[in-house]
Image: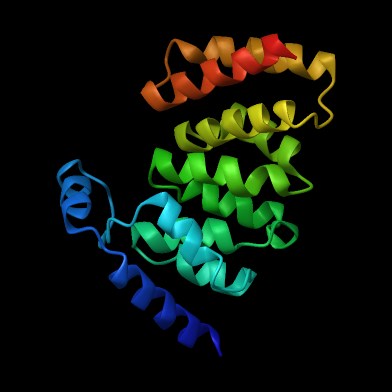
Length: 184
């Protein structure tokens, strides 16, 4: 099956899992997508398990203006194929805090450049990339990935200085990271 065929099969699965009420609520809430199927994350994870992890497919899905294909792109991108340049490009085109959260939970912590990318996004990536960075760093700390005490101190100072001017999602992500820094 080629990428176009897989893309069509994914759309069939999304239509089958569509939740019209949730879709309407997301639109009313102002989600910035052309199309929203209203498929919930557990169902999206189940759909992702049915398809190959493939970088070309993931990039194709990310480029679509559909909430669910973008989330599936994160789930289907092989971590070893998620180059730092691609990560940075995706970070600059993130549209929602949900994308930042899913990327921080499922993809970025699995990449070899997770710490470096997250630190760069904290200092100059914008609100959504910074949200993703905070949550990714939290996952790295909880998973016992190597972050030195000096790096932890620097991260703590940096996020503390960002907290006052942050939006709600970033403030929450900062607090989650600060709690992880204190616990470890």
